[in-house]
Image 1 (cartoon, rainbow, N blue to C red):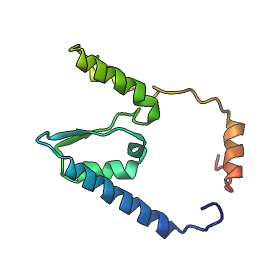
Image 2 (cartoon, rainbow, N blue to C red; image 1 turned 60 degrees about the vertical axis):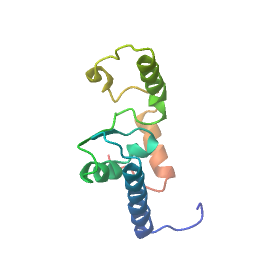
Image 3 (tube, helix red, strand yellow; image 1 turned 90 degrees about the vertical axis):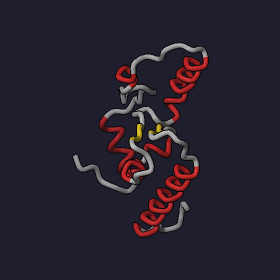
Image 4 (cartoon, one colour; image 1 turned 180 degrees about the vertical axis):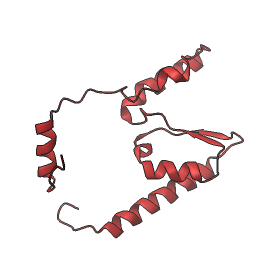
Length: 123
């Protein structure tokens, strides 16, 4: 990929195929439960989340804001809580999008990364 040009059509096709594959997995794994909780880095993809929510496969879909790898420890803690028969904290206390590693970069660093990617900062 490093030296291959990829068109916007290729990217759109990949996104579409990715969404369809995820829908097939959700359909194949469907149980009697009307609700689905999605986690993992794939669900950082807003397009996929929209397609899943609008698919009608489930009455409701919950995608926590800490769905990537940084939420793994929290997921493990919730499983352990369940296995031990304890009540987990209320969901409202788990909705912070700020659960995760701190990222130490200033405005100049962000602009440098944008230029390295071959683009120009807009601000």
